[in-house]
View 1 (cartoon, rainbow, N blue to C red):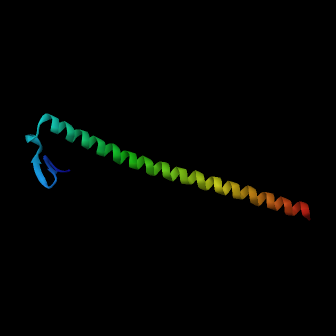
View 2: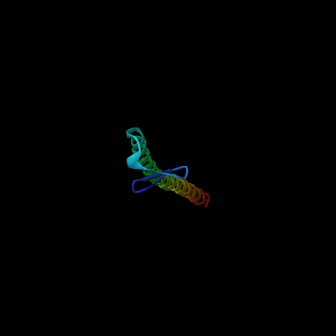
View 3: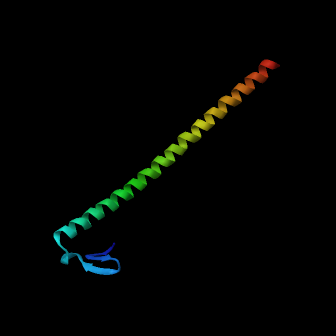
Length: 79
């Protein structure tokens, strides 16, 4: 379904939205709202994915830092 002003295209056929029934216009409004929600959810998912990657990278760096410290301390104690 595509829309140009008040013209709705379904399967390649154009329909004037004003000629559609109340139910059909209700469906159109539902679809528009769901498309907006889907776009918002994609945006939020991108934010969550970036944050998750940042926390994962922070954890990896933290673990690597502790491993390096324990290796350094073991080397100092052996000397």
